[in-house]
Length: 430
Image (cartoon, rainbow, N blue to C red; front, side):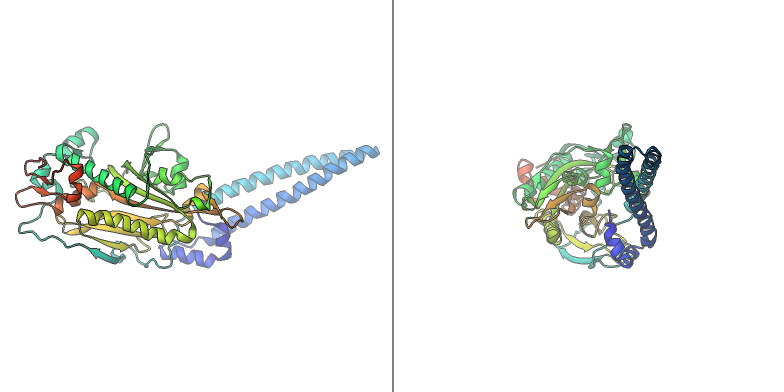
């Protein structure tokens, strides 16, 4: 949510920020609504003062026995009372209209975000690792002999429809091991608090984390009005809603491993083979709630936490900063980490790490109390994948594949796999 005061102070800057995203100017309409709303509030306050003054004079007229003046003033009080109620109702309606308008407007990009129209304009920041060279044509994850029998799309489609997968046996265990490894690393070494969150949330949580109203079609809603989380960013971030946090309590850093659900609206025909783009998937999420002065440093810290997971797994990756045309709705700045997938001969996103500034905090009224005193201020919120478990599984399987259909697994997973380091061509751990 945008700060209406900031728009009043610099409408040209606000529109320029939207233009960088390819969005139309909005300040004129917003400020017109704001002006009308403030005028109604002012008029209601004036009428309220007149009502209060007349109310006092009613008693004086009564005491003097001036019945005519008493009746006139009493009628005036009733008139002003009705006017106040009407104008307050109009101001409330205008306020709701203004809030609704602001709720559909994307966050303003940070100054250092590169301008661009789409993902082709994203800017590479760095690369890590050596892309593996094979003496055979590398396969996609679902085609590898040791994987195919344990990655069942046909049965999943019978149960749930397209874009679902049924994992079993050793592949299911590797998938679980990856999630455990990520969680342990984030908790034991990166200082995040492990959190077991609900995966059903209310409208308020989705709205507060900028998933509503604009992106309702991208998520699943139950018949009783609850939402299946698109990511645990929603419940983790919403922990701070409505709170005034002591500054000394910041930053708050959380991680959670959850199922995530997305309708993938608008992605028809994209990545239909394999498990790269699913309606149901798992992620280990990272969320930070910080002091505004520290949020940029916190984003870099979170980015390194995610990159480090890939480095420990020995998976080549590149990090890019997203251009203005490719950023998510609520982000001020986003870095994507893309793992190398030999089967596709390309880098594919495996993590996004975003800072939203105070955009989400304003929507959910999350503030902190400065140690130096003064009024509470809005916190900054950040979120990032640490990592997407299914996509990480794909990267592990494709980068470790061997000519005989087996897969050499990352050594860091051995403690989670009973010491086993290989997925055989027959689908067994050894």
